[in-house]
Amino acid sequence: MATTLVRPRTVVPLASRTHKAPALRHLGPNWYASVMGTAIIANAGATLPYQVPGQRVACQIVWVLSAVALAVLLAARAGHWLHHRDQARAHLLDPAVAPFYGCLSMALLAVGGGTLIVGKDLIGTGAAVAVDAVLFTAGTATGLVMAVVVPYLMVVRHRVVASQATPVWLLPLVAPMVSAAVGPLLVPHLPAGQPREALLLACYAMFGVSLLATLLMLPLIFGRLILSGPLPLALTPALFLVLGPLGQSTTAVNQLADVAPGAVDASYAHALGAFAVVYGVPVMGFALLWLALAAAMLVRAARGGMGFAMTWWALTFPVGTCVTGAAGLARHTGLDAFAWLAAALFLGLVTAWLAAAAHTLRGLFSGRLLPRTA
Image (cartoon, rainbow, N blue to C red; front, side, top):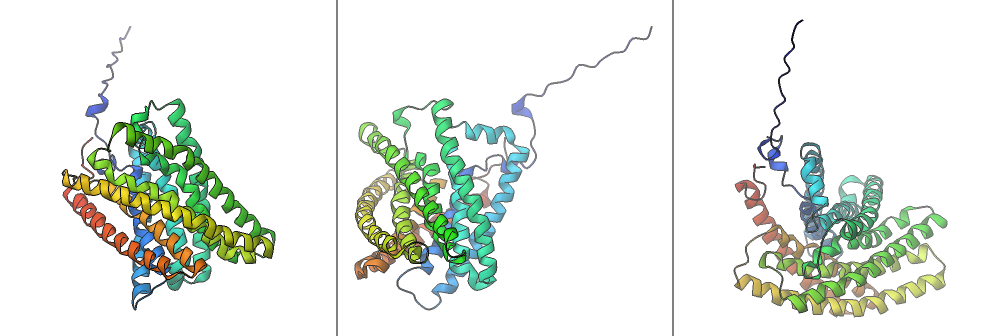
């Protein structure tokens, strides 16, 4: 009788396996923050109360850059999930990384909104509406899913304690607010009647979802700062993330008030216009208070030797939402003070973007940000 020898299968330890596209292994969802921070430059710059020659063209260029960055990053993240599925799953189960999955939604929404704000100058209004409709739908769906999935994972899978609370926890909760802020751009392009009213009220519903969820989370974040002291140096820029729901909600109520007259009865439209000011002014006041606190903590961290990290992108998009919020208040109140505030914040936004972008490019070319190791 012939004897068949079966060669035992050699099991290669996971740590020693070689991966395809090794540079993509460490490409986390936090990279979408760079797309958000770039897109908000175009969106905020195009809506500033004060415009200078060439500003619109510059915003168009930045929007194109953000759209290209989004396309490249979507492809790269697809490669990450394809070739490094174990790492992608590990990110979802990591309480420090999972909240960044909210950035995908906001990147889609920011670029989509920019398509209707400045991109229409390049591709035409019809194409811009179509592109924004796709990105808005995808971004909103993703944002609502992550607003449930990430908190669910934090409750049932992540093991966190109060001292680990950081503003990063706000990211999946802010995404629906971004939908509420950019959704009004599509309202005038819908048929009059129920389609417009439905989208308008859906945006207000998402405004409520994000606002109330943020109000639940903020006490944990501030309590952690008071009881446990400053954040680690590299994480200090994340304090600016608190500005996101503040500035974005102010932007949302003003954007919604702009399109309300064509979507709901005049009495409701008038009330929503008043609500934009009654809500927006106090929230903007608190945003400026938090901005001062976060800036002071940032200076402290810089003096302590804070180096570059991808958290620097937290200095861009949240500040940009305050720019658009202040610009909206300038439209509805007519106060020059809000117009000047928007301009001053925009200068700070551009400065932060230049710093974050320069260090990111340097880190990419040097291989420090995306090392080719497992």
